[in-house]
Image (cartoon, rainbow, N blue to C red; front, side):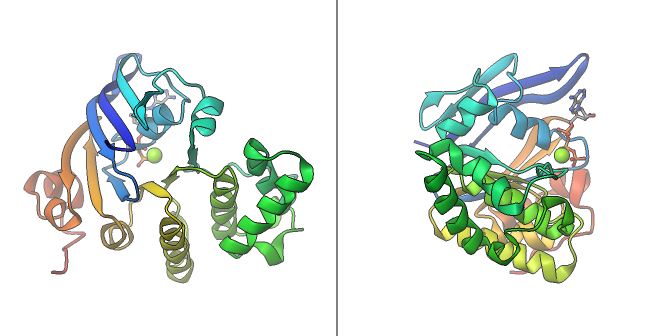
Length: 242
Ligand SMILES: Nc1ncnc2c1ncn2[C@@H]1O[C@H](COP(=O)(O)OP(=O)(O)OP(=O)(O)O)[C@@H](O)[C@H]1O
Ligand SMILES: [Mg+2]
């Protein structure tokens, strides 16, 4: 049984079909990359999985449980955590307090939440900046803080929406290492990324959306050689190294 199963999912915004009959799955322990052009429906799919939207058609199963009509808190409680394409840190709070917000989900009290937050801050390398205001962080650190806040909820599935956008190559490399470390901890990862040099090598499988529809799914080398994917999205911008 897959950890996450999206079955015939359709999400409309008025007349616009943002996700059109999408079926895809993520297995336990995998890193799955979700790619496609701007407006393909990637973030919408994340939002449906995370309970922000309740799609009108189709099903979302998580550990076999029907979570289609869950709200964000229920989805998080079930073990799904996410980061945002446009960062949403709590700007007026410290780094530590931001991560404690996540930690409270499964903590017995303040001391417990603080200990969990400190553990995650050390894991993600943000511990030296624990007393900074979140607003004072660089974009790379804000993205990392979102990852830390999500991790503090002890997720089974972590969804990352463009964790590398706006990062320089050094920061990108550091983020890749952090994601690999999270994966080694046994957390399943579903990630959206436009940087092909990042998403292709790190992913076990890739799912491609275009105009709301899934147009391909498979191993990175299969997907990057797929004529429909090249036509819709990749063009000449990525050639898999064999
Ligand atoms: N809340 C909303 N209300 C109306 N339309 C929306 C809403 N959210 C997304 N859309 C539309 O749905 C389509 C899919 O958007 P979505 O943000 O899911 O794409 P995406 O694949 O994440 O794109 P990008 O790579 O630019 O982030 C787009 O046409 C977008 O304009
Ligand atoms: Mg998006």
